[in-house]
Image 1 (tube, helix red, strand yellow):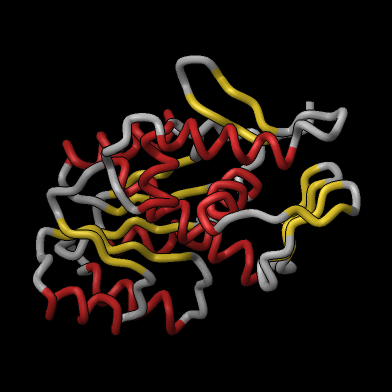
Image 2 (cartoon, one colour; image 1 turned 120 degrees about the vertical axis):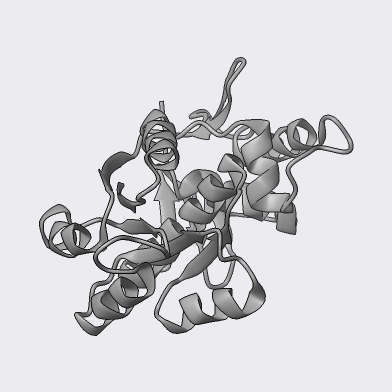
Length: 224
């Protein structure tokens, strides 16, 4: 997935670019709104991380112009102007999400992933499939080799997250952020417990295993 970062603070921009590259994203970093306008056409990003206070062309105006040009990329405004009325201005200008500074990088990642999933489901069909495992995103029906699997809401949340990003390794903390909406695990092993339950339903009865533990890193889903 390609992410365009438009940020005039060199320290913040460099941090974002390095962090997102480490997560496997292809990034382009720019420091003003005018250059970003042309870069959107050439780079064709999936997600744009956009600062509000930019030189030459401010972030709100750029956001409005991109929407008037029917640019489909998801836009996340990242700004120190984080009061409610400022967030409303950003969303009304056409942004898909708004995150105030200072921010936690894990929360930023979770929001990017949510935007990416929104793009996938809007442009493709409403079904995820890995090998013979199928998840219907509308009905929340899960089947493996034609068998219906009965999952809890949290099990479905984990499965949808992993199936939306085949082969991508998710740490326990990132699963907590995405599925439970929290950054710390109050029960110390809640993610491990739910992954074990999910594995019993999704993998144990079938010869091909799809859920994998990457020791010291986290979990991923792929056919191996």
